[in-house]
Image (tube, rainbow, N blue to C red; front, side):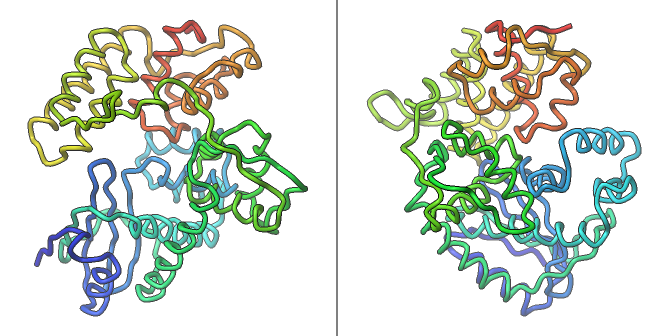
Length: 377
């Protein structure tokens, strides 16, 4: 049996409870235009999850919570490409994390991924009865009723946090000694990056963390009067005019966005072009024409950046010192990538450790090369 629908007509809590009460076994697929998530059920209990969101990959999740560093992550991913083992199995084999800790983190990762879905108002879902991944999963079991109650609390928490931290472009400023929760290495990493200048977006990228996790850690410090946030600063021109809007605020359709993307591509503005084609697919996800054009468009961009040397084996170097580059008006993504360029990492390694999607990472590297901020061996 296959169940399909949309979260605007059947809420996530109701859907999860229906599958639990029916003791269903199978895969629940939930997708927006930009993110796809899977929740795996066995006899009514959740036994795992998967997500297309790069920041929710196991490796990045473990980095954000202080279990891995980026060097170990890159090494483990390289091993995975060679032997096709599950990343968790590789990490326990090389002693990067214990099996008990891995199980705990897989459970937490699954819960955190599902909690985010509670904030989605419009997403298609499909339950595929009796269908589960062919690969062997690390066994976990999550009680649905408990998860639903915690999901409702998460939404309440997020509403309160948003009242104090309205944007990822806010800058946290220390007004007292920042004290992380005892034993929370991830929170310690976040608070270590509070320097009265970095935005929440930059901290999230640098620590491989979700926006919610960073905001929750900062909000806790705000409750103890150790920290405040200041209004968002403007990073660059892309922050002042949102993609998908005209300068006068009139909405546009997907066809217009595709045309704009083509014009921007012809002008060599790949970063803006990619954002426009992404916006087109977000705006009209069910259009086969838009999806096909987006695929062709992405292939064009991949070819362009490779012609200019953005290949896995190329080694980037900074064209100036990092302190001077830090004063540039660049995006958080560009700042993350620049800070990982040390003359040792090749581009393939940077792609492995970046929480930014691969094509976006390649385009940012290409733009840094074009702007003369980096050069390649």
